[in-house]
Length: 400
Image 1 (cartoon, rainbow, N blue to C red):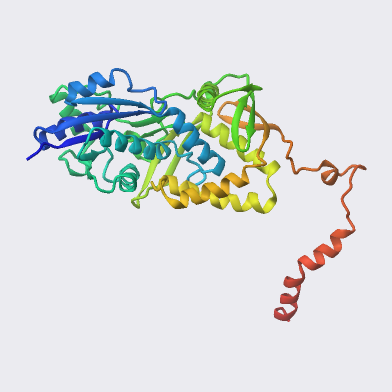
Image 2 (image 1 turned 45 degrees about the vertical axis):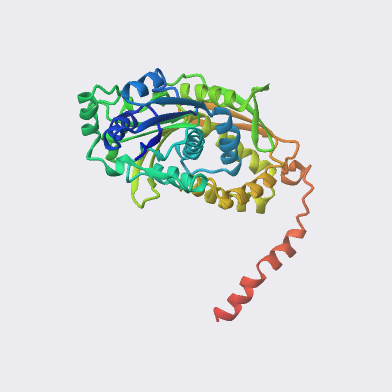
């Protein structure tokens, strides 16, 4: 019987570190191929190959996905206005399909027989990984150790790691589960599982507390071209560089802290803490520029599309014909979304200071209440009579 060759989505965190050892024991003699995708994370990336090999992996792949992540995922979600349940900018959810695709690509190259991930059995990420696997490699076997193994708590995993000399950063005193990429950080577990407990200071990884943020605000100008941010303070920037800079500016000013009770794919509610400075800033700026440039019915209808798009991302169906179809609609709506938005970042808040666009639909001569007013006030009477005619007729019949 041939030995299994297992491709592991490896982060270097507690679950995936323990997982390599567990898989080696369960599939005796199996060859473990560890794969890490670089989505701009800063934590737990040092000596990843050394850690993976020391834990039992036969080989390690580190795939730089940052540019693809920004241009093919983040900008699409931004243009769509995709905020899950009006709050979450979907950092982790956006990252999962591209990580799963990278794992599938390496698995094909290495002739692997099994795909594995380190997602919990009651979380969203298992769905995102496995639906992507089904879309891109429907013939391959999938193993989810966290749904099978004997550990029932992170504390038990930590004890197992210590017993087998597996290097992990999680401790019983710091039990947070953290996922990070360039678009945001998610933090859960520990005391955060009680919705009445305010997030402790150590739960936040990059943002300054609003109370401790600078007393002087930061003003930024963000230029967009057809819905995509292209310049910061007048300087043309690549997408990756802009997000890095806005994360830095936002974090310094306490911007981007989110505390959310959300509806998971599997039917439970969970309490999640997010830090997403750049995402918070860019979504705010993009929406304000759309208010200026989109025709009323398009602006209002697109808000519904934004929710649909967010659900597609959150629910793990990124590689779907529905998402591609919505992309076509969104891209058409973004043609006029070109211009500049000026914002103030101050003690956790993002405040609009101004916006301008060559495609602005705001006409000051129509909106003004000064002598420059060109609006035909006399036309309003007939408009109102026709607009309310149906309700008037209904009332005449039914209110007798």
